[in-house]
Length: 199
Image 1 (cartoon, rainbow, N blue to C red):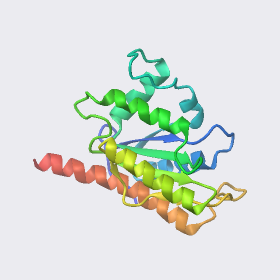
Image 2: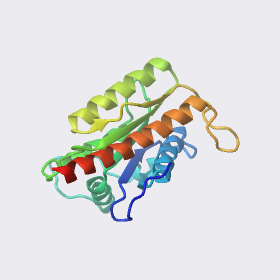
Image 3: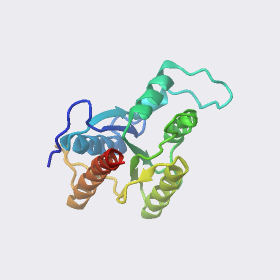
């Protein structure tokens, strides 16, 4: 399936998350969601775990921002949809990802504040089923607080082995969940644009 978009009207989907490990399973899943969105006509941008590590700790008092912080904020401002991907650490979101989310507070005075009106896909990996569910629920709460729309399907994986030696996802149900999440984000954008045009 491919939707027809002119380059300047194609939805922009920004994904951020992952971990600092060289072969982060979470980051690979994030890339897969973005690849699926691109197949549907979206323009995508990725902020990896290493990119997030370059962001200083969020300081709400000091208005000065580094070039890395400014680049992240500019991408979120442009985004028509966002994907947040995090491993589960101790039953919750990682500090690396949370710091990036906190930086989005800088968008509070924008005409479209925070993640207002945008679909947000959530990808969670964990070493235990309880941790994955709790973290997915926690990120959904954060997205609601930022005025975003969590996609109906969230991707929560409780399996240390996700990809085969060729880099392909082993689980067919996981493949379908990722395809569905990407489709929901792109279709949400299309429906939102149609509604805006009708008004």
